[in-house]
Image (cartoon, rainbow over all chains, first blue to last red; front, top):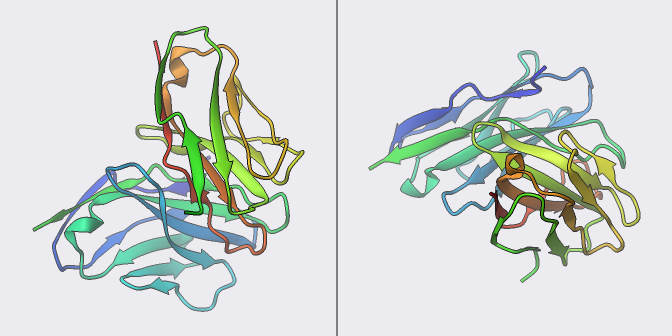
Length: 117
Length: 114
């Protein structure tokens, strides 16, 4: 069964508008973490934001925020005031459990975002 | 500049040949990982190492081997390359100091098997 699902292969957004990238996950472990990464056309993977399963508040990092709905098992990335440089591939990833053996990430298939001028 | 260095950047290889992808990090991270990225499939974990001297299998380990002789280096070897191993390979590392520690990625190696 797919653990991380990103249902939007591609999305467009107008410059300066906000956009939400969807991510749903599947786990029976009460302890997990969710990450979002950005991959520009140059290919590198850039860490954006993290949300822990026990965190009481939604994570925010500058223009990035995470809409974490635990009961729905969703962790959507919200980018506010989109910029042309936000055009990239975005990956949602999950880490299950705690402890020395549990730092592996499972990635979704990604969403390609194109910001229109 | 601290980070992860992968070599080579790209390589074209004949099927059946042996190939080692190199990965070095200078952040003193305990954990290291190898992923492959294929179109439409995201990143899939090949092998990982939680600490020097230990390794583990990920989601797609067949045809690959790794070693972790020290903290900094984590080479990935294809013993006998096949065309299905054509992919972009990423090495990553993370601190195990906290559950919220992200993985840091190298710039990737683009490998084509003919």
